[in-house]
Amino acid sequence: MSAPRPYQSYVYAYPHKTAYRPLDDRPALEALWEREPKDALSLYLHIPFCEVRCGFCNLFTRIGAPDELTGRYLDALDRQATAVRDALGDAAPVRFANAAFGGGTPTFLEAAELERLCDIAEKRMGAELSAIPLSVEASPATATADRLAVLAGRGATRLSLGVQSFVDAEARAAVRPQRRADVEAALGRIRDARIPVLNIDLIYGIDGQTAASWRLSLDAALAWRPEEVYLYPLYVRPLTGLGRHADSSACAERAWDEQRLRLYRQGRDHLLAHGYEQVSMRMFRRSDAPAQGPDDYACQTDGMIGLGCGARSYTSALHYSFDYAVDMREIRTIIDDYTATEDFTRAAHGRYVDEDEARRRHLLQSLLQAEGMPLEDYRLRFGTDPYGDFAAELDTFAAHGWLADGPSGRLRLSPEGLAHSDALGPALFSPGVRAAMAAYESR
Ligand code: SF4
Image (tube, rainbow, N blue to C red; front, side):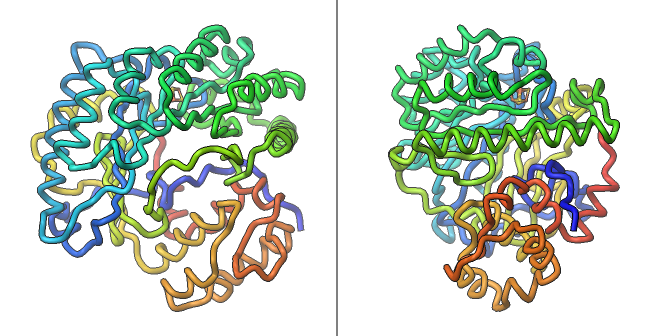
C-alpha cells in the first residue's frame, strides 16, 4: 500500500474553520452556554495585526493598523468580552484554566495597549492571569523590553517567538525579511524578562534550505535552551505570498515532500539528542523544563471562549467564530466590520458538532499527541470502542506502520505515524466536514 502524501494539512483544530458556515438561526450565546460546564474554560484573545505578512501565512491577520485601528479593535474586544461574560452568567461558577494571546502578532500592540488587553481578560472576563498559564505569541521586532515587561508583570508564563530561520537568506525566501542579529537581540530581551517558558518556532522546507543550514538554525535555537521548540513544515497555500509563485508540478511536489521529511527527521533526532521530548509532530519540550503551573484544561472536552474577530469559541455542540478569509482585502473588511459591531450576543458563523464529530475530534486531538489516547478515556466518554468506531481508518494506519505496538492501554502513533500526522489527521475527517471544506471558496 503506497503511503499518502505526508503534508496535506495541519490539524490543530477540528472541524477546520473552512467547514464553518453562516448560522441561519444565529443562536444567542446565553442559550448556547447555559448548560455547559464553565469551571475550566480556555480563554483566547486574537490580535489580527502584523508588521509584515509572511509569505507562508494563511492566518487571519492584516499588515499594519492605520487610523488608530488598534484602539478601535480593543474597544470592540471590550464590548465583546462584556457581552460574552454576561452570556456565561453566574448561575454556575465561571473559571478560566488558561489563557492565550495569539494572532497575528499580539505584541504588535504597544505596551499600554497590552495592559488594556490584560485588563479585558481580567476585569471583563474574570480570568486570573497571574494564577493560570498565560501564553503570548511575539515576533522579533515587536518583542521590545517595555512590552515584555508588561506581559511578565501581568503573569505571562510562556512567550512564543516566531523565528522560522536563523539564516537571513532563508528568512527572505520565506518572505519574512529579518536579520539574525535582530532575532538574537529579541531572544536576549525575552530571557531578560524572565518569562518562564520560551518557545521558538522554526520552519523546514524553505527554498534553498539544506541539512547544514537547518542544523545551523537548530543549534542557534538550542543555544538559548528554550523550554519548547516547534518545528513547522513549510506549507504553500492558496492566496498567500508564496502560493502565488509555487511550482505545483507533481515532480516538484514529490521532491519537496522528500526534502521536508528528511529535514523533519533530522530536526527531531537533533532535538531528542539534546535533551528534548517529542510532544507531537511539531512540538518538543526540554525534558527538565519547569512545569507551567496549574492547567487542568483538557482540549478534547472543555470549552473555549475566543474573543476577537479571528478567534473561535467551542461549546460541546457548536464551534463558532466570525467570518474567515485569507485574502488581504477580505480580511480588512472583516476586521472593519468587527470594530463596528455593537451586538455580540449571538453566534453568527460556525458548525454544529454532533456525537460522531465529537468522537472524531477526541480521537484526532489525542492521537496526534506523542503520548497517544488512553483507551479507557474514550470508552468512558462515548460508551463505545475506538477500534470499532474507526475500524477502517485504524486498519489503514496500521498497514502504513503508523501505529505503535504495545499493550499500554493507549492508542499511540509510531515515530513514522507522528511524521505523517498531517496525512493521518485529514484521513479522520468526516465526509460532511470534508465536503464543506472542499466547497469552501478560498478568498
Ligand atoms: S506567520 Fe505570524 S507573524 Fe507572519 S504574518 Fe502570519 S501571523 Fe503574522
